[in-house]
Length: 321
Image (tube, rainbow, N blue to C red; front, side, top):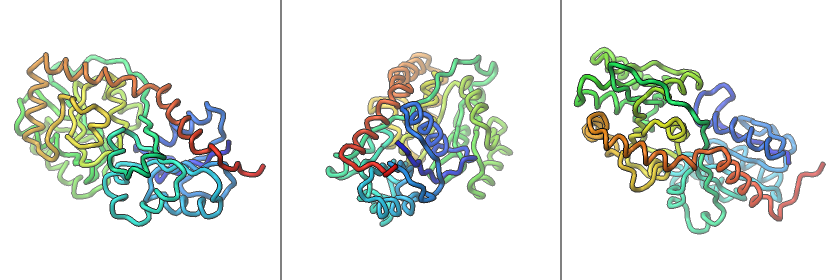
């Protein structure tokens, strides 16, 4: 089939949507499809549209559904879709109605959908390439944050937690400056405590090198659809400490031991301190992340994506050749 894949992130963007689009295009080509990645649909003929983000891709979704009402249209829901926009935004809600199938990125997201919408929804966990562990820093217990500076990510929570942590713990933060206020705060935190280093945006290959040596990854987001960085950490054998929100629970499991209270640096410091000083607890986090490893494998993602495509196309008319 000819598939147009709509992503609100441009090709050069170094973020989750962009990496998901590139990876899914590769998977779909492996499955025998022809794929075009577009920021907005250019109206070129296609057998199927796969759109990332119900609200931000709505114009393309609406146009495709209007011009080709008999053709399959799959909408993938991001974190802001699932946990904010579909509750209140008319365009996001319209995208849900227009979609032949929906995709969510972890199973807890299904709880945010009506029973009728769940019947046309597939769960597709994002994969990550395996990554061999590297020797950690010798003099510090390195905690890694991989997050652009956006309010939804609560990206400075680990830096704030350092005030309550022993001097051997440091935080390395990788992520682009997307919010001037947060950038100023990050620079002030670096001046106040040299154990916190915000290094700005880095290429994906470099991010993976940091992940290979880090002793923990902190994901402190206020909302997540199913963070690919969690899959990356699991595939790298790096335990995760995460805010106790639905999107992280869907990635790590209800019984995961490494959660902290959302927006609470004191509680984050408690979990980080325990992981640093209690080897049995650290091994438990590692073991629980290893148990989620099958969800991050490329074959698992490929099967789930193929199922969504097949379900969407069942009984639908192909585009004329």
